[in-house]
Length: 285
Image 1 (tube, rainbow, N blue to C red):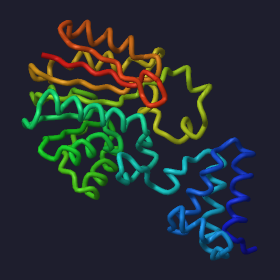
Image 2: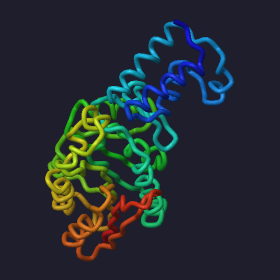
Image 3: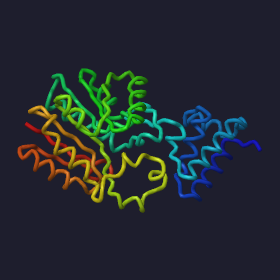
Image 4: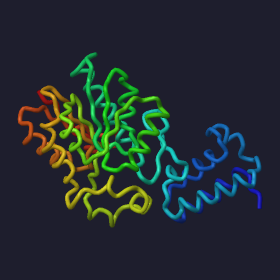
């Protein structure tokens, strides 16, 4: 049976609401399949949707109803004004991580001015941080690591499509960098930080689709920070900036670990747009 745009939206909205999903996902998916902007969609409310497009749209809505994130259905997510390819091998980039990028760029400007900077993004996933940093500050040399080759395939594709010259390295956190003897001015990371026990309260949209290696980090969610920070002295230059995204409520613990390792560092917690303690920065040297 054929449907007009407004009928398809109405159906999607009530179906997704029943399944406690985001009802706005219907509009995003329909715009994707119709290849329309929001204003074009609003102007086409009484147009009949072509059968093939309607089938694809309805299948996608059913998939999202079952919990599949719309970003994986469409194959992309917006980050810092650019479109990044995503699939189930990488975490979907979040707005909070855009804030990490924004504050890192501001701090680098103040600390390093126009000087050449060597930056590394640890656990790069889709490459969102590394690629964005390179494109926002092109003079910088950017390296990115990940433990999974499947994630690096996605990150390399994003770097290529967006025209960012980033060096990608396969390996566990800082290990490949320590092995190569490389030193960096800036280390950024949005590592896994969710305590294992939290899985019970989380949405299946996240737990059954996004890679667990990018989400969970032991009983307290701090396992990766502890490993990262203990190895930082081996890869940092004398004057350096470290920036982490953290889970809400973890900033104090992460700050303490940084202060123990770098007693002279200036450690700062930055709250995100929603008032959560989401970023920890350390200025060293």
